Length: 272
Image: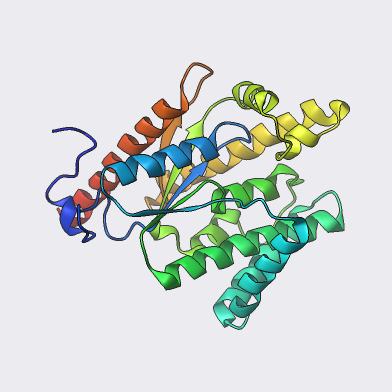
């Protein structure tokens, strides 16, 4: 059997014209990794691969809007969610975690708190609408990465993984694009934009920020693995190794195969 083709047991999980590669519970596939590692390109190609296999897919993309318009869109998204007590509680937990962990400035506290609350509101909005599988290149883990990037390792009242669990990540698969900071930084230098803060860093801060980025990334992956080893109750996460020779198309193909096999293994374990 071709590894990209669904097994007949799996096609019952999510009804559709061509069946589904994934169990019904999976609503989001989020790509995660260091800035510049190739999340956006890989997630776009991954979504296209699924469409070629006949699976309906939607994507979350950063639209090229001005700052004011972008923030207005976020306000329209977040404010209605604050009427919900559970969402307010989640937002308060995010704010406490960010503030207690320490950021460089009060503006940084507000910015990363707002960004992560926006991600939470977006996830809730997509869940309420239903619809096809959603592929994300900037999501929950990347939001926590932004927080931990300038985290000062202070004690906080709760672990970031507990807040992640409060989002309800049982409908997520996280794709970890696992590559070193040198590979990621090399790709950033080759890009023509200045989207990442690593691209915008002054030369005297570049090395320090790269070290902080790799430390934040390693902390997230290590603590997720530790939680899984301790309790077996962790988000579904798969890894794709990245080096300078691998093409984006190869990354997308390997991610598709890894996600498919992880979901199938989970499904069989639950139904055995």
